[in-house]
Image (cartoon, rainbow, N blue to C red; front, side, top):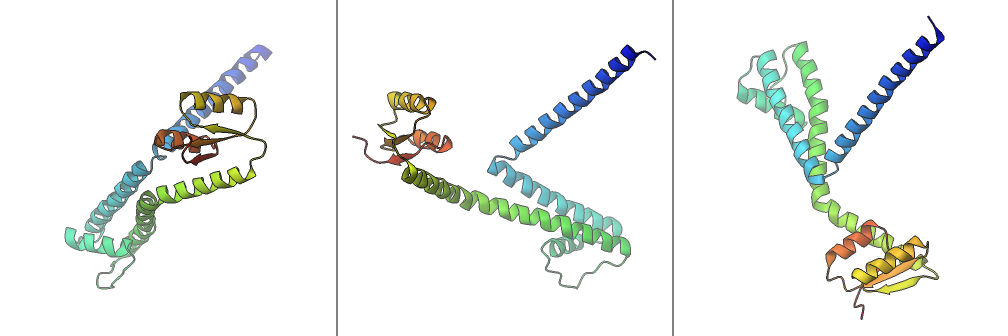
Length: 196
């Protein structure tokens, strides 16, 4: 085998590896983007919870031969960890299935509850934390410019000031919530007050 042949094979192998790596990275980014929305995470978590309930019902019906109602009952008391003890698995296969259902079902239920609470409380808490950071950033400002009003011209002044590497503080009436959200996202310190 010649030296050029080995090099070309190595290049092809490395090219395939690079394409595979890029594909995995794109897949990972898509997954992260799909679960970045809190509402979508809530839907997914409840979807998984319902899926585990169906898996539990069908599993107990097949393994134990129970009715759909008894299977649903056993699945619910397993996932919620109530465990009354009136319905118990009769064989090792069913016990192993119960353990599997217990771990995954508790995880799915906990995730669903967590995502629900995050959707309800999270936005307010996150906004409060961001505002506290902005207040701390304002306290640390020295030798900075104050931009009164964040309209079209105020936005250009802020962009120019930041491009020069200088600090600025924006004072805006807050009538346009879009401005406040943009300033929060860009970590630009601002005060919502009368800018006249």
